[in-house]
Image (cartoon, rainbow, N blue to C red; front, side, top):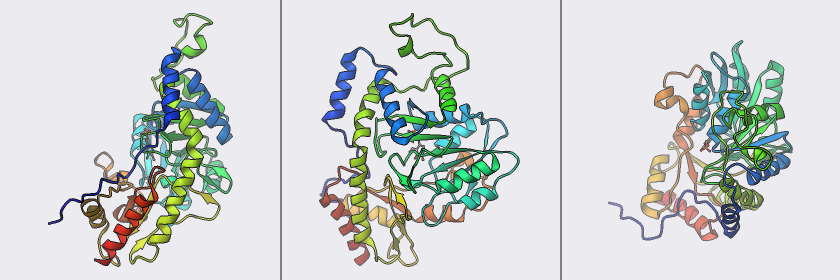
Length: 384
Ligand SMILES: Cc1ncc(COP(=O)(O)O)c(C=O)c1O
């Protein structure tokens, strides 16, 4: 029987919060303004300007941003929306909420991103939109998807939850779609604990902003000091999805650190790739030319036919014998209970990736010793 390791657990992920975030939150708490106000507006402007998009709306989660994106884009009953299954359930659940039908298509072998050819083959008269997801922070083929959407009169929505700061061929992930969403969940490339951002065309983001604040025609910050906060109209059946200024305070500081965070993630990724290349049956991630990945995930891919252990055995031994936590991304959505039996196109690559992919720890606060601990453990497992 395997004894638990003595070394402290190396978690799969850990947020990097410094004195700057703490000071900004204290400043907000002392300011007298806690809900969506000046800090959220500043955070929105900074993200908007960095991406070069028309507008940005800071919200309570990426899931909220997805729901608002679909509502604002008028996606609803009977519409088909093309999407990968190798993703988190958030976009799919939001599509269900608006009454649309997700059409799952397969991903590319190299990047695990939605395959433009498979997407094109799935277009029908009922297709309204394509939702792409930048797997692990490696942007999908943005130019191909923009052209596909334009040629067929479809909306392009980027689920860029993993990809803030990533780019491909000089285009930032999140800057090409009609709308795009980001996640600031605790494990993401930058975090606010919970939070998200919707960006894109001004008219659509403005519609989403209205729907995300109860359908009220002005924000409470806009009314503050100029008229009664009770002086408003409700013009749409909205929801409440705004980001608070307490949350935005964390976001402002994290966003400033994002280039450095991403550089550190890239260093770790390069070290892993150098150290792990050549282990039989283990493949390291492919980075296509012209891509600056966000490195939310560092995936290895274990082929049990040529590796000494299966993916699940590797995950088990890393944790049990070496105290190293890993994760898997993702259980394909079409295999989850709610969506079982809904796949209408072949998902061969999706299912292969799901059976073999393992996410190693890759986050800015990891030390060189942490990184070496992971590579040494994998080498030791391969030599058993
Ligand atoms: C691809 C993808 N989209 C959306 C989400 C949802 O993000 P949030 O937790 O901010 O709602 C996640 C969360 O992990 C994700 O991985």
